[in-house]
Amino acid sequence: MKASTKDQAEGKFHEVKGAIKEATGKIFDNPKLQAEGTGEKIAGELQEKFGKIKKALGE
Image: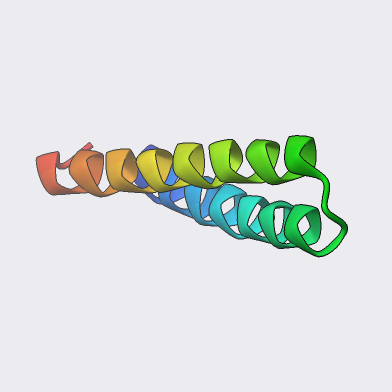
């Protein structure tokens, strides 16, 4: 698997995982879990975009 594709896949995974944590934190009124989920979701989005950039550059 190319590095760019791996970054995109891992980024999407973390984005979904973060969204689940964020929603769980909202449901159970747990601000710490909600904040962790938001952070992980944003990090996943960035990693996915980084993978797209790498792919565009041919890496």
